[in-house]
Structures are given as structure tokens and as C-alpha cells.
Amino acid sequence: MKMKMSFRWYGESDPISLEYISQIPGMRSIVSAVYDVKPGEVWPEESLSKMKAQCEEHGLVFDVVESIPVHEDIKLGRGNVDKLLEVYCENIRRCAKYGVKCVTYNFMPVFDWTRTQLDKKAPDGSTSLVMYWDQMRGLDPLKDDIHLPGWDSSYTQAEVRELISAYSELGEEGLWKNLEKFLKKVIPVAEECGVRMAIHPDDPPYPIFGLPRIITCEENLDRFLKLVDSPASSLCLCTGSLGCAKTNDVVAMVRKYAAIDRIAFMHMRNIKIMEDGSFEERAHLSSCGSLDMFEITKALVENGFDGYVRPDHGRMIWGETGKPGYGLFDRALGATYINGLFEACEKSAN
Ligand code: DNO
Image (cartoon, rainbow, N blue to C red):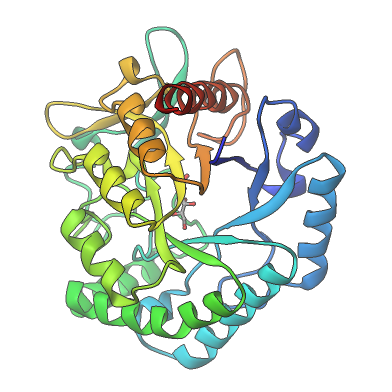
């Protein structure tokens, strides 16, 4: 197969072993990061070389990083941005030195993904992550002391409030400007060391609590790709994130961006969008959710996609416990299903 199947691993603290991951049929690459260093600091080379060696011991390749986090001051364009950008570039160089070919990041203000519950029980007893509007409505981070599951707990409530007001002053156009500055500095370095930067879309792809969000829809992805028109500035196309807006035609987006070779990394998962725009994460199979995973795969294969793929978030099944979305069993089922789709699409195309 042309695409490279990968699996996210949280390093030594991950309850899932590399041995287990290597037993998933067709597994090739490990997606990981250096987790014990704060955003804005340089990653120790020893951590990278150790991770590379550990993966190799299990016949796996450590060649995808998710993520090198972008410091809030870079996104806000304040503080010592030049120094932070320098550190970011140094981290790309270091990753490349240890064999990394693809680096994922996002440009979401303050919070990464947003959900209202991480263990919603389905009728079959499995659990998954969900975002229900009736749990969101009425929450106001400027007034209430809210801690949505999964949000960075290192911020105090006062810090969150300060960040939210700084971002609302900045607005979408300000965020675009800071993203452009980031890319102009970082992409030439990525090009030099043979790394493709892959931006993760905003999850979900619309403003939450009035925070600006820009990596959301086809028009904005087009705008993003033009900021620095280079294969080193590509997309991490997350089907489950973009798919949460009914207005996004995920199959058409995959086809369009694969055709111009601007997808470096595919996050493949399925979600079910409800009437009111709420959504539930579901099993990967097309019939379990709102996305047509066959058409998505076909669009990739027909356009010669040869980047990385990972089964994104799985449900918790078979009594497994652990990091929500990142258990072994359902992600392994997802990988196997996705491998099947690719094999079928490739063989019928030949
Ligand atoms: C969620 C992930 C995201 C992703 C970042 C990339 O499970 O897909 O947290 O890693 O947005 O920077």
C-alpha cells in the first residue's frame, strides 16, 4: 500500500505497549512527541533518540510527531515571539535529525478539542467522546468556573479569562496574521530538513465561547494553503473534526487537497452529527456514523495519496480503560478496517 499506517503512542507512560501496537496488521509508523517539556522549550535530543530506538526495537518507525505545540504567545503575537519561533524551528531540526518526516500542530486558541463528555455510554455498552449542545449552552468561561473534560488543567481560571479576552481582541484577522508570520518563519526550516508540517483543523470547526477559529472550512483551508504555497505546509486532514460541521463536504475536501498533494497526514474517524449540531464519536465503519469512509479512502487512492494515516479516536470497548479516545482495541479495529478499505480501493483501481 502507498499510504503509511500509523498509531499514536504517548511514550513510556502510555499503558499500550509498542509490542501490542506492532502486532496490529500493517502497522508501520509511530506518532508521538516529547511530553515532558512545556510549549516554548527545546526538546532534549536524548528523548528523541530514545524514542527512535524504542520504536525500531519493535520494527516500527518513529517518523511522525504530534504535536510540537505552538505557544499561545505565538498565536497571540505578544511577548518574545521571535525567541519562541526560534525554539520552534530548532525543535523541527531536532525531530528531523532523528528521522521525523511529518510534524502535526494546530493553531487553536487556548483549547485543543472540545467535548462535553468523554465516557458517554452507547446502547451496546461502549463509551465514547461526545459534544452535546444542551451541555454546552449556558456555560460562560468568563463568568463560570468551568473545566470541560480534556482541557489543559495547567491554566488557572484567571489565566483562561485573560487569554479569552486577549483572543477576542485579536479576532480572526489577527490570528490569520500571526499564523502567516509563524509559517513564513517555520516552513523554510521544514523545507530545508525534509519535514512536512501538517496543520490540524479546529475541532469542532466553529467558534467556541467566541474564541476565533480559522482552520474550519474549504474557503479557509484554501486561504491557509496559499499563505505559504509549499508541500512542506500541508494539512493534517482530520475527518472527524471537519466532519462536525454539516456544511463541510469531507469527501470533496479530501479529493481536492489530495489531488494537489497538500495532505501530509490523515486522521480517520467517524462521527454522528445530530439534528442540533451536537455530535458523538462513533466506530470507524461508515454505517456507524455520518461520514462515508469508503468514499474518503477512494478519494485518497484515486489521487495517489502516499502520506500517513492513523485511526483516530476509538471508543472504549471490551472493558478497556485508559486515555479517552486512545485505547488499543477500537483503534486497532479502526486500523484494520481502514487497511481493508485501502486494499480494496487500490486493487479495484488497478
Ligand atoms: C485529538 C488530536 C488533537 C491533535 C492536535 C494537533 O485527539 O487529534 O489533539 O493532536 O490538535 O496539534
